[in-house]
Length: 395
Ligand code: OGA
Ligand code: ZN
Image 1 (cartoon, rainbow, N blue to C red):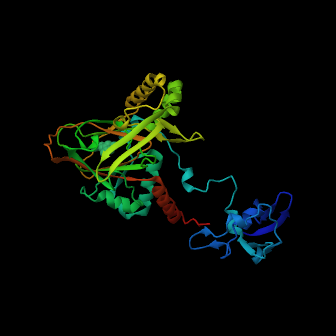
Image 2: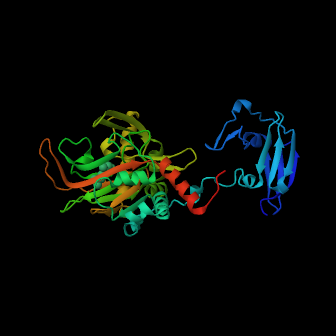
Image 3: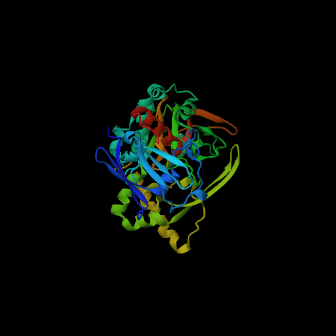
C-alpha cells in the first residue's frame, strides 16, 4: 500500500515533478534526473546495472512531453520529446532521497578511536566461523572497519591461510612483496621486517601512492624465547589527542609533507617515492590515515632547510604520543593467530628477538605469513553481505 503514488504534478518553473504517495510521503524529481535514469532496456542495461545513455544526449533543460500514473499508482510513466516512454516504479522512486540519506549502508557504522583499554578487548573471531558463516564474516569486517584491529584465532597455523582469507573476502593486493609475504629472518633481507630487529610503530608502504588498506599477519611459528611481540596504536586516537593537546604541532603534522621511499629489489626491482603529511585528512576534514615509518622515511627532505628542525620536533612529539601509556597495546601472537588491521589507521610494530642467521641462509625460528587487502574489495564484500543478510533491494 505504501508504494502507491496518488499525485503527480509538473512544475515547469523548477523543472521537476512533485510526487505524493498514499501514505503522505512527498518527493521531487527533476525532469533531467528521470530522463537520465530511464529504466527501459534501451537506456539501461539491467545485467550490468549500467546506463547506456551518454551525456551527449542529455539536455539539462528537457521538458517531458507527457506524464501519467498507471497500474493503480504502482508506476508513473513519462513520455519524452524523442518519443521514448519511460516507466518508473513507485517503489524505485521512493528509494531516492536527494541529499538526505547516505546510499552507502556502511556509512552508518561508527568509527571510534581507542586507547590502551583495547588490550583486553581486541575484537576476536574464530577462523572456522569466519570461513563458513557469512554473518560472522560480516561481523568481523564491521569490526575491522570500526575498530581498525581484529584477531582471528584457531587457524590451521600453516602456510596458505592468508590466501584462503584473501579469497573469502575479495581480490588480493599485490605489492613489491608479492601477494603473500613470509616474515622470516633472512641474512640478505630486503626489508627490516625480515630481520630479527625491533620494528618501531609504523604503517607498511607509505612510500606508495596507494598504501595498502589492510594488513594481515598470520602466525605460523612464534619465538619460544623473549621478544617477537607485536605492538599496536590507533593513529586516529593519537591524532585526536595531538589536536587537543598540541594544536600547533598537530597543524604542522597535517600539512608538512614528509618524503618516503622504498628502494630495493625482490622479485622486481623497485623505487617508489611519495611526499605525505604524517597525519592525513581530506579536504572535508575526514581522517584518511597516518603516514609514518622510520625505516622508509627518505634520507632527504623536499622542504626548505629552515623547516627541518621543527619538522623533526613535530615528528618526535608524534612518536612520543604513539608510545604514550594511554595508547599503545601489545599482543604476542601464537601459532594459529592472525591479526588483521587497518594499515592506514593502526600502526604496528614488533619487539626484537634473538636469532642468528649465517650468510646465504634464512631461519624460520619465527614465521609469519602476511598479505594485504584494499578497502575497495573489503567494502564491496561488506555491501554484498549486508544485502544478503538484510534482504535489501538493488536499484
Ligand atoms: C611487517 C611487520 C611485524 C612482525 O612485516 O611489515 O611489521 O611481527 N611485521 O614481524
Ligand atoms: Zn609492517
